[in-house]
Length: 409
Image (tube, rainbow, N blue to C red; front, side):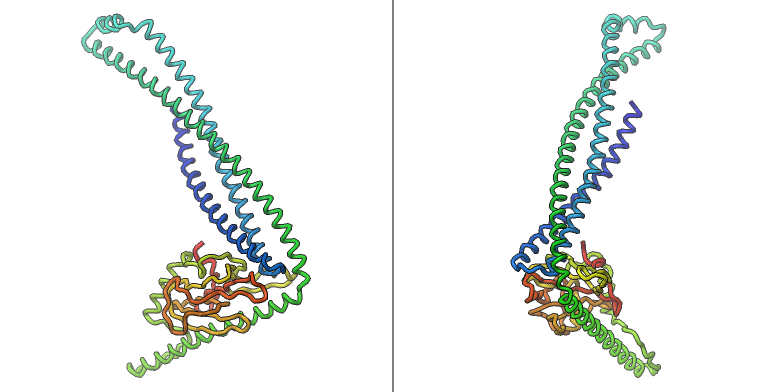
């Protein structure tokens, strides 16, 4: 019985750990389901334009990625719940075995008591003692024996109740597992259809190679222009730092250091530190959207043997969505990007955030902005009414950072 209780304690601890992981899996599944609903909404809006476009293809790819994540999550849930089922089934079997042993032992005690433990025989048992001390011990023995019988009866009832609870839980877990397996099958069917649609899109889009090559060249020009503007900001700040050094040298009589790097003011150092402290917690630059192109160098989704480089991320959203500042700072630049609407660059100490493909910009250079303040409306491609994409970047001086490692997930 003691070994059973120890094993039960171990299983209880394991259940608590698995229960926490199950809660995490369910939260992730809920978030993935919400993202799938949003990409479905984007795809439904995109269907208004019958033309197969790269943006639709990217959103569909994101949908497939999310659906695959969802199925993986469901598999993990099934694994955890299967573990619970095995544990509870083992517990029910062990409890039933212990219950049978206790019932047999208790029955033997009752039979023995009926044969030997009448009130007369108890009294005789005490009075036949050789000494007062022995009589006292016999009285205590009878008392303890009675209490033991009572505890045995209570333990039997407790185990019966526990078995009932475990059997009920077992039934619920088996029903939940069955529901998850059905859900997995439904999601797998949807994934198959989406992959078939993905193949059809790809076949159509590969016929537009020259168009994609032209758009890729345009995008490279936009990226280069953004990089030049950021470099101008850094050079301007270095120039200001040199002027501050010269002014300081005049006042102190010491030669200027001739700095070649941007030196922050105390206020900017504070802003920079606060920005760094919020890594992985920055709000998204849009209220709602999905990432359809990631940071860095990767294969072009359509063109074979062609790599593309993204200095930030692309966030697809609905038409009319506003772009917002991810952190408090000062607007350094607002400028027109060739073929790409407006771009806004905001400084946060030594960090810069860049928001491009904007229209109706609501800030100007020198403005102080607060976190989540609207800075403009995200532009919609006139050639593709479904394409509303914010291009978002984060720089640490002239070093490009992956925004996905900074914004909240």
